[in-house]
Image (tube, rainbow, N blue to C red; front, side, top):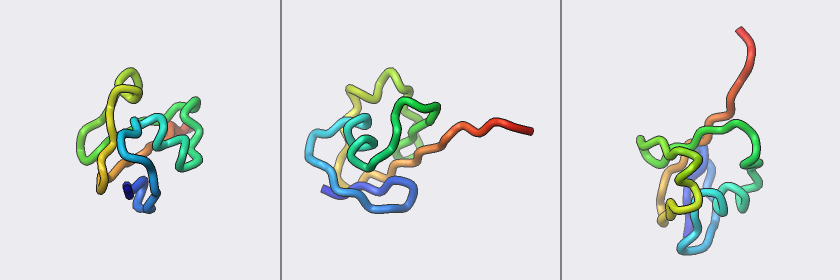
Length: 67
């Protein structure tokens, strides 16, 4: 199946959760990032139990420091 992460297409398997999809896409899930599917922000505590579906649009935002 295909999902979009920050406007780029990625292949993943049916039934994958958010953590698995991000890792498959090569993203470091141990850093401070926020994830939204569509317009809904998904808390990190829910990543393992949130299934990603074909065609989902995922937005990953990395925390930035500075002023």
